[in-house]
Image (cartoon, rainbow, N blue to C red; front, side, top):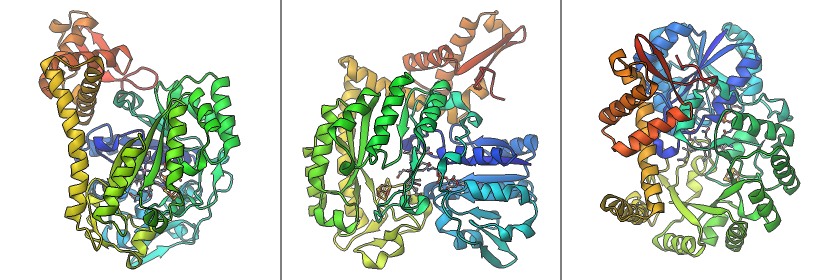
Length: 531
Ligand code: B12
Ligand code: SF4
């Protein structure tokens, strides 16, 4: 049984890091005995022709895809392309969007044969052996599919109680060198479940209200594997990582004992931390902590069921700084009851915390309490165009604020940031920038260039260097590659040469030199060329 898994495109602004859920899914299919390949369109371009070539070469029986709401249409389009190529290939979708839009998705998009609802591992284990026998699907819980005109939603599947038996994410199937080049942190989850019920979040609905923790040993093993792949930063993405202090102590102790030298960051809640824990985390390499604060209006905090107090925000941020870590607070624009005054209150508060802070717009994702019970809130949803569910624009209104007003607030905040950045860029161009400014500007330029090189498959297009230019010398071949990339991407000369040489030095790019010339390619895990 061959399964191709699609990592659908998503934009640079969302920091394309290795897809976590999909690598869990890949591991579950491998454990069920399938041969699995990931078709990655996060750090590769997507074209129908490329997909067809990949299908032709791998000949999968099944194509599965994951998505969040904002890239649902792109993902569905890819599955449509799969069906157009070969209608016999079975197509599956899973993830937080389709888990809560089962009926409408299956009715509107016949190119999707089957949806896996919620946590996937146990469903995959049961489904894989019978996946080609549709008449056997009925007995499997946690799925939905079409049977002629009927939409069949099978029984609910319970959450996996012992998550230590879930196989570690199959990151070895990803194009690792391309993700390393992007440089974003690799997310890990040390537990599943959330006892809180913030009205804008799907967390609890996706993973249940009971927190299920993985053993410290497995968390450390996973970190070790990630470091072994050459990644340079990890992000512990569970909100509730700091809830169980004993476990944080154990993990931090284990990191030191195993000498895992990797900087990491963590998400946390302001009501679950203390100075001792932050000090331990900092000693174990954690250098930044993000807190969801959402709003500084106490009434609204209650309404959204966040369950935190504003005093706790100040205390947590001070403790975080005292431990020598960066603190980041995130806020949401457009929560129910939002007014000009509440936004002002939030912004004043955000500035008073001395933390780095940022805003997203409220997005009522399908399945969230705010979306399902919209009539109970001072809120109107203006669109169900899923492309707009990226949290970077206002798609709701409150009685006091239209999307336009909410946007005006967000834009004014972004404008301040942009003006700061413009000043730094001006200093850079005029040659008066200090070292910190230079690192920041060149870092931005490098990130954009890297993204362009990956998304436009530039090395694949121009990475063959003719023998008369190579003359047997890797150095010459590299200089020529840098020159061509600069020309193709129309990028800054210094940044291009620094970036491409660094990729080669770090082993992300490998050269195959022969009398026929030099072929540059991205490296696989064992240093060969990705084919
Ligand atoms: C870690 C995390 C991140 C990390 C890592 C993302 C990554 N690279 O993988 C970071 C911080 C980078 C991130 C970014 C974003 N995230 Co996020 N994130 C999470 C979080 C906390 C855990 C997700 C996770 O990995 N869980 C572990 C895995 C195993 O679960 P899973 O992905 O759901 O996959 C399981 C099942 O869904 C199913 N499954 C999934 N896909 C498939 C496919 C097939 C074929 C099958 C059979 C099964 C299957 O099986 C899997 C195994 O059990 C969730 C909250 C939550 N608890 O779910 C939010 C969450 C997924 N994120 C969310 C959002 C919105 C985003 C962003 C768009 C940020 C933004 N602008 O607001 C970006 C988009 C990134 C992207 N395209 O995926 C939303 C999604 C809501 C929605 N309907 O769109 C969630 C649910 C939080 C919320 N607000 O409610 N996120
Ligand atoms: S925002 Fe965090 S604490 Fe609130 S429900 Fe979601 S995962 Fe739980």
